[in-house]
Image 1 (cartoon, rainbow, N blue to C red):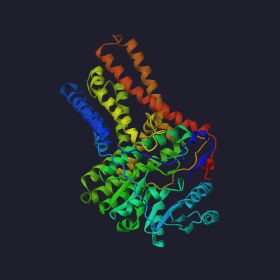
Image 2 (cartoon, rainbow, N blue to C red):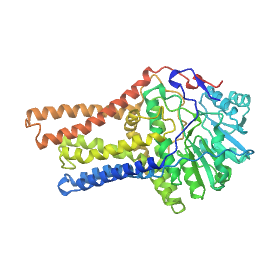
Image 3 (cartoon, rainbow, N blue to C red):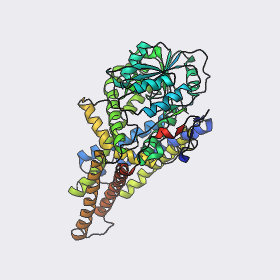
Image 4 (tube, rainbow, N blue to C red):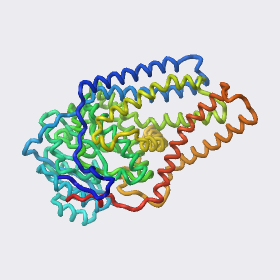
Length: 530
C-alpha cells in the first residue's frame, strides 16, 4: 500500500525507499578520496604553521584553533565514512508484542493526529497504538478511539515527552516500543523493517531514517530538510558500521528490557541522544536501517527552526558535558569518538563568530591575525575544499532517496550560517548550566511577522556595507596605491571572506522575511491515505 498526495511536488514521496549497499570497488574509491583529502590537509598544515605567517600572536592562535577544529571534524567525518555499512534486511518474526507510543501536547493541531493515528492503524504488523495525551481535550480521546488506539491521559508529568513515555512504560507490557513523533505518518510496512533485527538479543534499539513531506513549503523548510539528508544516509550508516548508530527520537524502536536497564527513556532537551548513550553504556548494541518508511514535518519558518536548534544545541551540550564523562569508560573507542563528535557539532556557533569578526577587526583596526599571501592560501586551501566537496557528493549515492536528496544543499548551508548565534547561545547556556524549557517544535509556520532571530543578520548586513564603504573611501583618499600591493591584496582577501559570510546573511534575512508572505496551510491535509 502506498499513500498519495495531490501536490505535484510530492510525487513519489510516499514510496518505500532504501539506501543502496556499498560494493568493494566503491569502498576502494572512497578510501582513495579520503587518503587524498588527508594528504591535502597535511599539505595545508605544513604551510599554515610557519613562523612568518604569525601576525597578532593571540589572534593567530584563536584563528588557528577555529580553522583546525573545523578541519579536524572534517577528517573525523571522512574516517567515519570508511566504516559505512548497510544493515541486511531480516524478516520480522511473527508473534512479537509491539506498542507504538505517540505523544500529544497542548496546542498541537488535532488534524495532524487524525492522519498519524489513522496511518498507525494501517501498519500491518500486529501492534497496539497508544496516544500519550496531556491536552485535556476530549477530542484527542475521540480521535484515538476512532482509529483503535489506546488513550492514556498523562497530565502534569515532569520530563515532557520522555516523562510521558516512562509513565506509559509502567502502564503497558509490550516487549518492543516504537516511539513515533505525532507529525510523522508511518507507512503500513514500517514494523516489517525494524523488528527482524531484534533476533539478536543484544540489540537495544533499531533506528530508521527520517524524511519529510513539507519541504516544498519554504526556503527554511527546504534547508531544514537538506541538513538531514547526509546524516540519515551515509553518516548514520557509517556509525552503524562502527557499532555506534544513535537514536533520533522519532522512528526509533526500543527493546523494553534495554529501556528498563537504564531506568527508562532519558529526560532532557536531547532525550534521544541521552537515551542512546545510556543504552550503549549499558552494553546494548544498535542497528540503523536506512529506509524511508515514514515522513514527517520540518519547521517552515526561520523563527520555529531557530527555536528548535536552540533546544537541540543546549541539549547536545548537556550530553557532552554530563552524560559522556559519566559513561566514558563503559563505551567503546568508536562510541566515545562518535558521541564526542556529535556533542561538539554546535561549537560551529563559536567558530563562525570568530570567522565573522576577524575580517571586520581588520577593516576597522588594521589588526591581522595572520600574514599570508592570499594567492598562496587559495593554492594550499583549495585542494582541501575540493576533496571535501568530492567526498560529500560521492557519499550521496548512499542517501535513502537518491531522486530528491542529492545536490550541494545550499539552502541548508545558508540556514546553518543563519543559526550560528543560536548555536553560540546554546553553548553559553550549557557553560553556565542555564536551563531552557522543552517546547515541541512548531507543526505549522508562524506567518505574518518577522522573527527576532533576524537581528544578528541585519547587524551583519549593516556592518558589511559600512566596512565596504569605509575600505573604498580609505583606499581612494589615503592609500591610493596599486591594487596588487601586499596591503591591497590582504584587503581584498579579507573582503572576499567577509563577502561569503555576507551572502549567507542575506540568505538568512530572506528566509526570515519569507514568513510574512506565506499562506496558511496544514501540510497533513494534502496527504490521502486511501
